Amino acid sequence: IYHVGAGGSAVPVESDPLRIAKPESMALAKDGSLFIADNREDRLIHLRPDGSATQIQIPADLSPETIALDKGILWITDSHNGRIYRLDPGGVIETVALFTGDLSNVSGIAIGPDDAIFVSIQADLDEGRGYIVRLGPESEGR
Image (cartoon, rainbow, N blue to C red; front, side):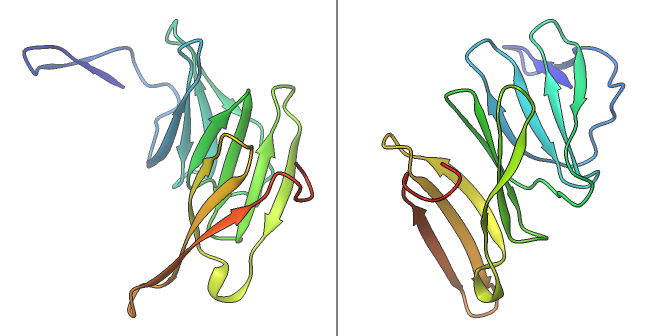
């Protein structure tokens, strides 16, 4: 992890004990904490403002791709398994949605002001076909 100053030089913030391999997505909390989805290592990392970092416990089959943080809830897409997960501040993780077939490659997530979940899906890259799916706040798991 590096800090880039006004002059453009990159200076290491600290040694990287968790060795972040493929930071696919990040979400910044109000307290300055940074959540990182490390897709290559199938893990989530919590980097605190003091520079300390920990790995968040997630199911072994979860491969986090993109994440979003809203009202203390960390939302996670898993394109390998076509799922959306919800991680609450207490560490409880649950599956919110499962996509199959052409809709299984979930690749992005955002939370709307009405608590709706917006998901981008890459259905067929060769044909240039994709979707934006809106899951209303009344959906199961919300």
